[in-house]
Length: 399
Ligand SMILES: Cc1cc2nc3c(=O)[nH]c(=O)nc-3n(C[C@H](O)[C@H](O)[C@H](O)COP(=O)(O)OP(=O)(O)OC[C@H]3O[C@@H](n4cnc5c(N)ncnc54)[C@H](O)[C@@H]3O)c2cc1C
Image (cartoon, rainbow, N blue to C red; front, side, top):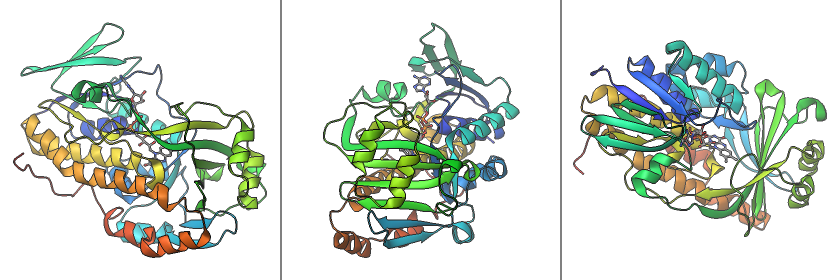
């Protein structure tokens, strides 16, 4: 390791806590500042592929996570009404044998709790709650953070892991408004005992139809079925995971979908259907200064259509940890991290946006032809899942 650094992290989400754990494990002093009064994630699902689970193994949390996750056998891309499978991606043993780490479907509160436990095990007092960052000051001596409660904190470097509405990004690049993508997302969880027996095997299903699609998978060791329905709607402004919307609207949005989709919607708790706008931010052409950098959604928010937003945050954390360990000069380390990450994350963001089209054709034939042209089952193995952030090359090229 290089000189021990004092590292300040704004944001205690999946990205911030993974970075905290990895950097503590490397021997640095780390302080995490989270605006919420307690750490928590919404009751939804998340998928993590090998390009992230390598990192979770390195952090020592993979076994605990795998024991309460679902390891799906495959992804099926189905036509919304007939259930014809137009393509599939093998997961399970095939994914693990090929890429060296598992593909897991996880309940968000589970992964956050496991990351929090690991951080507290490494350093019991490094997480500070109820600390909303408003601004930072950077000079040759170090970095000073200012919080809404009037308190401050000092360190060598700041990692802005504060999500899509990042205060760190806003200070670095100005406060650009979010762009509405024209897509909204429904989020619903159904307990297994509300569904017919053997309702869906442990697979990921993507039901694709005109102007909308729905992804469905098990989480929490198979106790909860998670479904997320993405629908094109020209007018919608509400941004945020916790916005409830009428069950009748969900039912109407997915009218005409397969009977299995109707069974899930009918089994949903009518007061627990959430719907919100999916927004994007403009691409950044840099995200580091001498002592400040961004990580996860603050740097490269994405549409969720390749299930890679949190995965990218976990990849970022690993590459950043390696860069800080390899280059003693912080500005060089932050630049090496950014250069290693900027093209890959831009590619994932762009391809996720393109997937909105791939999943929303009007006719069966259009879906079949589009998947014949660009089949995710072949493509993702070649560049997405085979990336290992713990060994990808790090170098600093002249700007
Ligand atoms: C419908 C949907 C499905 C998805 N499915 C997947 C999937 O299957 N796989 C996947 O990899 N990704 C998925 N994603 C993306 C994933 O949820 C995000 O990319 C990921 O949560 C980003 O993590 P983060 O740590 O960067 O940010 P966040 O999770 O947003 O965490 C940011 C943290 O910073 C805190 N914070 C914010 N502002 C401040 C401040 N000023 N001061 C202090 N703290 C602050 C917040 O309270 C929060 O705790 C999905 C997203 C959506 C919308």
